[in-house]
Length: 326
Image 1 (cartoon, rainbow, N blue to C red):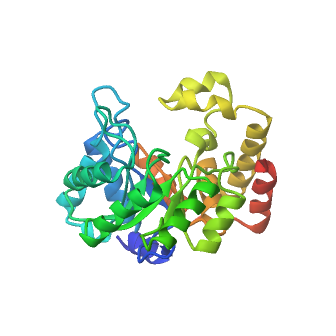
Image 2: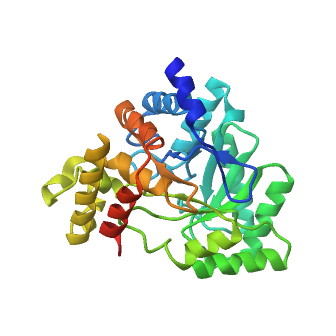
């Protein structure tokens, strides 16, 4: 127990943009709950994560409708049951998303749909309020003021605390901020982009510059490149190692192998895993609040926990930056 207390005090808390939410520098991805992690396993993973001093979990209403027998909402349901059984809702920052296609016309960012979808998420999460509610994907069929107006009503009703967005580019985020300012609507306070040592181009540059200027929090998804940055996929023969292997083939090229070589070298110096180094690199990025990462086993969870306290040197970071330069 003493070890746990030491780790809790050592974990820095970072403010999510201009919100009143502060989180430890790693967010637990809930995409695996109800998919590759059953309820019992998910509870054990969440318990260990919280025990180590972490406090934010990311999910979505659509997780995990792609799995056979699922219809969406499984992840939110598990997180809701866990918080209810542990009595810890006030200590957890709950992040969920709306807009992905759930079938039967349930998708998008229209005001009526958003205001209906949030009720379903609240019920599954067994809570009265969602801390951070994200537009999952851009919806060109709905004006920004309609969606932001829905978020304003939800904030006023106490259903959500803050709004954010995932997968917007710099132009889309700029447009949304302009509308929010012009019409005195809540703006997107947090951005959730895909970002890792390999997939850097969508965030680095104009989008990250905009987030810095506007003080927008950034939490990254696919932070381990669908598992490629763990180092376990090094050839086509490795792609069958997990259900996510099919999405890793695109990384098996000269640049990907350069990144793996740099990860191998840095991880050896620190007696750490490649995944821990890859996450520590994101944690050390200026103006990135935290990466999102998921685990399906307790050993994987211990690795995530270690990544948050791994301090890379300037030479480590330079080596990784050079290897991963687009």
